[in-house]
Image (cartoon, rainbow, N blue to C red):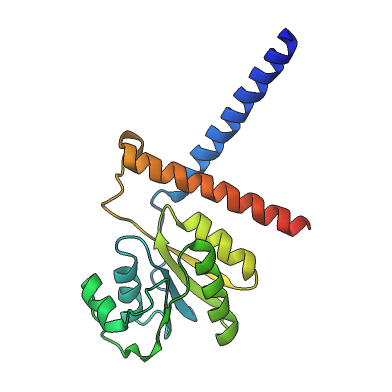
Length: 195
């Protein structure tokens, strides 16, 4: 019985160290890094849900970095004018190529909407705009369904998430929660690739 307890403790400590190591790598990955703001893509894709995401995507669209802007996860009755008013942004280019995805309510459904857009429009490159902490999971979900597409990451940083997130309970919870969701998606994609 004593030997079992020792083995169990070693296993639990090892599991914790593995989790901690992964968490450190995750938080290093999501920290500020250079953002490519010049490469044009076939479409700019923004996932709703976080502060400043839509305004950043509109800024990129207005700069001419793509002729298509796809906003995934808008409400059923939302239109372009409502998005402009809600986000205090305005289109300086024709909004005829601003497409709204109305089905998605979570990241998995965002990936499905984006995949349909990619297939329908035969896209080879997209710029993915989402919150910096949400980028690894979003990228994993979309890449798994579209391995042939080049995805340029465009993380958005928000003042709502503390730069010293480890000292703020809400920010720490958000980052840790996103890390756990990413682990799930990573394992899911790994298993699906094996099957």
